[in-house]
Image 1: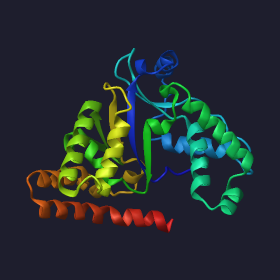
Image 2: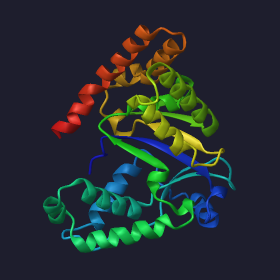
Image 3: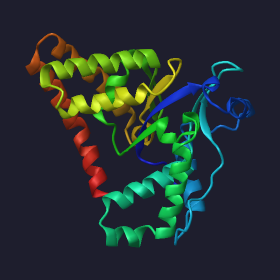
Image 4: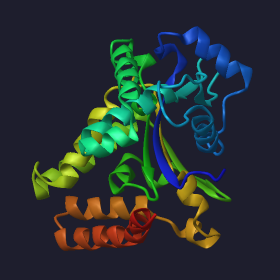
Amino acid sequence: MYAPNASYLRVYEPVSAFADAGYWRAYAASGRAPAISTGPRARREALYERVGWPWRVVPGFPREAYVIPRSEDEPLLCPWNLRYRIAQSALELRRLTPEPVAEALVPTDFLTSAAEVVAHDAGADRHEAPSDAHEQIASWSVPLRWFACVRPDDRQSGEGYLRYRTPMAKARTQIAVARNLVRSELGDDADLAAALAEIAEWLDGFVPESLVELDYGGVASHMGAEELRAEDSVDLTWEALDHLGAGEVGAAQECYARLVERWRDRRLSERLN
């Protein structure tokens, strides 16, 4: 099973922020938490093992999370909650797909089960909420708006991987700065301003002691070693924003155009596949 060609924007919260902190503290101490390098593949395998055709109910999954050890009593966690994600995706597919097609793809009893799962989790403590509350996923490329969450000095890289990690307070400040600069030049109705506002709202849902991670994931594994070393989209994003702040609109547009061009081919690959 190959690793998904996807990138990830994650939030890790301290274990004390969770309603069931005792479970997650023991989980982190057990050493069985998957690594972020192998987790996406493991999740896909678990999904394929449990979801068969025809689908009748949303299957159950073990409670898993990515873990960053910070101290024995206060590790940071990014929960998966695959069951909720599957349920939510099924309901979204039904909403966006023409009725005859949706009925063929997702049986009615599966949709009923999905609605029950979503309704239950939506009424629970937010720390038992779905993994997409802690992780956003993009296939084939990295969304340009994500680059504004981090700075070049947050970079961590090595053979086959590239990620950025930054404290929540810093990420919120960076998104606020980026959003204000875009709004001042393009207005609140600009698509980029709206996208940055969505990210800001998402980050505001977590405790201040959290950590934000931009992980190129499987996208990095499809880059050559030299391309990965030279990948500087975060630098280019902040170069564009700095130009905006200095009133150099033309230079900012040039940087942004370079970013769009850089990631266009990868986004086109998603359509072809």
